[in-house]
Image (cartoon, protein in one colour):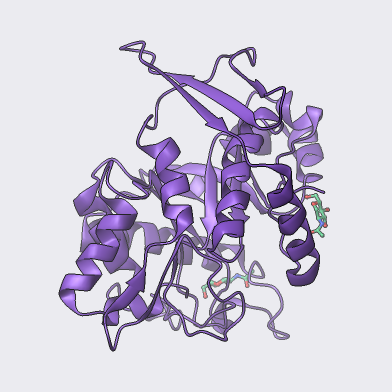
Length: 336
Ligand SMILES: *[C@@H]1O[C@H](CO)[C@@H](O)[C@H](O)[C@H]1NC(C)=O
Ligand SMILES: *[C@@H]1O[C@H](CO)[C@@H](O)[C@H](O)[C@H]1NC(C)=O
């Protein structure tokens, strides 16, 4: 719901904002876009219309995320798309409206319809989703990869270890707000580890420092290789929860005013210098801590052998502010 106001911007400013987010090597140059599947329910900063209001209803032109995915793809055809049903329409739930997995075949159909609708109605290939291996394969969607649990809970790894079918179904272990950490047991599974939701800090200088640390310390200490900022753009009214917890601010469509904030440029320090497909050294060489504080991460292009080193030297006084604000605002960006 955080990009709600973006569609209402005048065309010129909307295109400028979308360029700052998605145009390669320009602003943030984002490499992955995660969208919530509109679910007819309150979702922190608003609600988005579902593609299925009822069991026999389908419409793939509701909401605003299709448009944002298309604008992203138009600017960067190789951006990865990732969907997650975070809320569900009431018809999927049990009588007490608490369990959307009550009738699993209905929930599966609901999510698979969304992926197929993306392709049929918008020519969008979804790369990652939050569930459902067997049905995806049955529908010819073998290339859609699974990220799980996509929540804040490392004990899911125990289930992966004890359940072989689950383990082979899940491609990526996605954690929310991992705080630059992953347990040894998660690393032992030879699966990619992602911060599938992170950051959530006001987009000023402190938020920028926080995001810089998330992107580098997550690699050095957590062996994480993808970082999804919640959220991308503050296109929701000031005063709603987590105001400006974004990479940039665009919440005044009536005037066209917007602000390109620090986290856009922090992102650029990574995304302008390596692409999806570049690799870290398999044994952890090339990433580490600097003597005087800060970190460095090295990536190489496996084909051309080009090398990028990103150095981060966020000084300790910034850390103090970040930590204080995390206490006050209950943010999770930094592992105390
Ligand atoms: C799940 O929903 C489908 C479609 O309405 C229905 O045919 C099926 O019987 C339901 N299954 C259960 C276990 O309720
Ligand atoms: C964490 O995951 C485990 C295993 O999947 C589950 O049993 C537990 O309920 C989860 N905890 C929370 C708070 O969701």
